[in-house]
Length: 140
Image 1 (cartoon, rainbow, N blue to C red):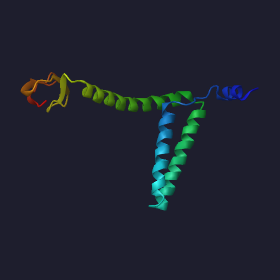
Image 2: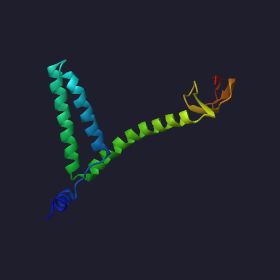
Image 3: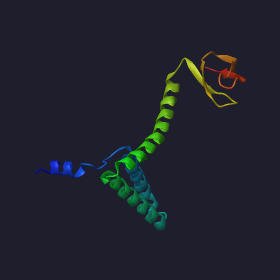
Image 4: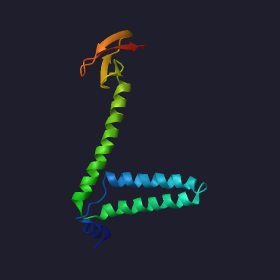
């Protein structure tokens, strides 16, 4: 039997890699790179961070070979939920930069983000969420 078939047979029923594996691995790589510079500052801190890096790598590998797929799915769902928040925030920021016809302002009372037409000058607007009236200054 060839190696690929044996590996496929071994991984059958195991969880494998997912987004959480890559997040843990990237954190371990970043800590390891940071640890290169900390070696010269404090040897004790260097040892602690290196142990954390090893623990993260062992945990990531443990997740790959785990047969408890339901628990790994729940962990991955939690991580994707947290990463999804960051992705949505980044997408909203990119949308704001690309939108040249509108400005985005926060309501001072309820902090809701309002999308307003870009008209130069000072305008009063009413928040549709809380009903508070406030002024908006548009410069360009």
